[in-house]
Length: 322
Image 1 (cartoon, helix red, strand yellow):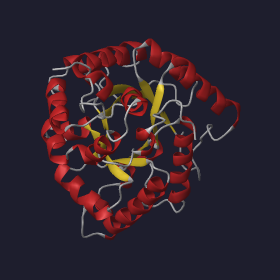
Image 2 (tube, helix red, strand yellow; image 1 turned 60 degrees about the horizontal axis):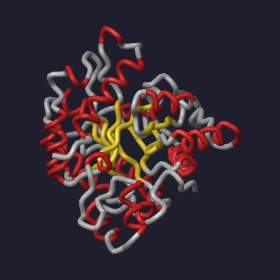
Image 3 (spheres, rainbow, N blue to C red; image 1 turned 90 degrees about the vertical axis):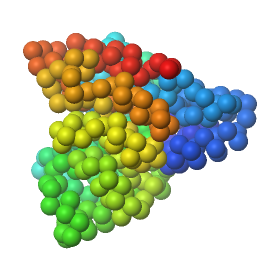
């Protein structure tokens, strides 16, 4: 497993711990290890348990939304537009048995690893975006797909997997349905697989914070957490800041901080990023916020303009100390 772009001290093995557990355990490590942990990842583990917002909050974007799914050029683009990292997709799924994943081995994988090192652009997460359209409930080989993602994460130094459940319909959300029982069973198994590798799978459920908490309790695995979508909350009339406080830091592994397309983040009347930062500060969360959409409707195909503008605004709002 590649370690250069993730913490080589305590945080590398703490990704399954809650923020409080990580801080407590990491602060037992003195000297260079503690300092490196704080520098390499936004863990709150410095001598006084204080880390600047620049280290606590990192901003990235999905490679497929940057129109560079599994393309080497995504790293140079990310650096040019001011991102801290990129979320790499496992590749299309459709009716295929496995993801069309070109990062299992060979020269392409090596070129990605070199680009990560040379450009300083991290890969905090790997996505299974195929499940936006395909059902996680009906795939007989779901374990093989999960394993493919987890192995790709290890090759790229990521510690979070993104699993959207949108392609599974809504019947599973009924707690009395057989589909719900099947979803819980599959998520529990996926969580076990991730936990065995000290990794985490973040699920995007479209549920409320209260229902997410119930689901996580049913699944009962440290390997499964919430990959929170601001867009899903806004689409359903919920306040993201309130939901962050309800969920608490320990249940959230990563955040998609954008809304649907129409406005840039700085112009969107529905997205209150300072209020979101305040909520995240209050609960002591740290980690990566990913840009998915929030593209200007008049320039929806202008990748550099949309993602560069949103990256700059996110950093201006998030990476400041109050």
